Length: 312
Image 1 (tube, rainbow, N blue to C red):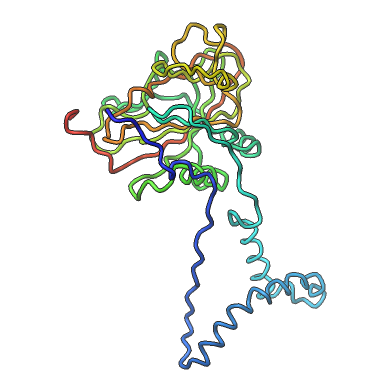
Image 2: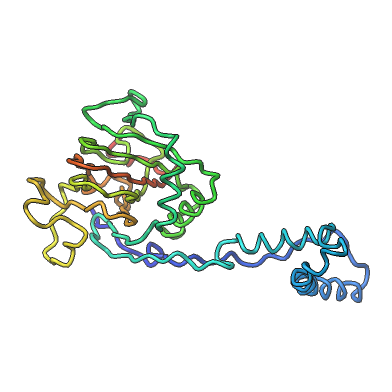
């Protein structure tokens, strides 16, 4: 099977602001003179808004700050402050290519400390026993396969939307048939684990999980690493800051074990370019021997995926 090639679109890590689009005016000018006036008025509005914003304290005594125009100005300034990439620096993270076949990337600081604190608070009242999904059996609690608690995040939450957008933009333009699924927070306490599995569903013939982000929100534990048993262990010991290299840390497991380092994430492609599932991304959440691990799963769904004919 052909290897996965890394294109320049796969490592987009800087969010680009949306192209500017002029608003539509309901008022149509009958003459070129009127049209020129409308354009001049359009450019004057932001200047007037800023001037009024600075004058707002002095206008309060005259009752103008609470007027309709004052409210519009304050709302507009507030919207600018809340718009991504306007008034706030871009979130910074570092990407390393861990494997090219399968494509696996290691991302430092993918989730910020503020976002982690927020997600931990937001998920607290949402936890329920984690289930194992199958197209044949539906969703079931299976303690032989998975022992943890799961909390689905609200897709409309502003912080969740920001992380979702980051995950989507990180992957470049994958087409209109792909979408990021709702974010899932998973909590593993002592003896919690997720046995070996694929994130793609072998039983499906149409639509599947194309990519995975596995991020760590809490790593105050022993054990609990993410194990890819079929990946060869890298020879370069500089990877030992993010994977288990000594015998005690590996605890007899084969392949590669990523440490649950807070804020970091592992990203991988679930399929070969021809649509067949990649066996190299078979993985497990190893048992937590002590403490607590909390992870964040972000999956990308490709509704246009079709199982290759030779596997039908």
